[in-house]
Image (cartoon, rainbow, N blue to C red; front, top):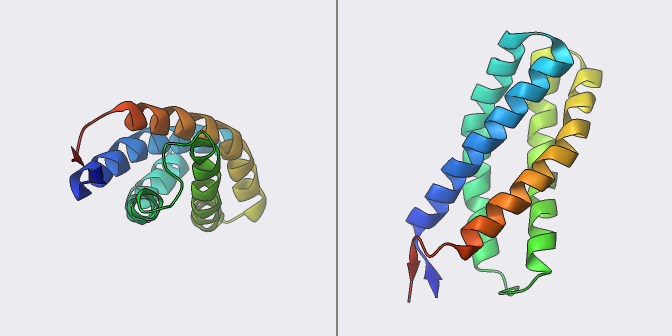
Length: 131
């Protein structure tokens, strides 16, 4: 089966909504500043959507198909990319790299769990698949 680009775009958008809400809540929790949460989340909407789309295309063309191991490796590969992006953005917004480290530390846990659930649901979906 082939994946359409529409499927990758839809996955990118749904994941970004989930990821942005999580980042916003964690940023506000860490900084006690709602504007920091909005700033980080809005910047990440652009950067993470683009990064996720390319990550998804690479994984769809991966040799690892229909495998439980795929659902374990893929979230971690994404997390490395996304964590680096979050750290850079949050350190700049917070103007404090220690708060950036706090944010990515929490996100390492929340985002891997959320990503796993999101990816599993999309794996079960037939949306955007071509025979």
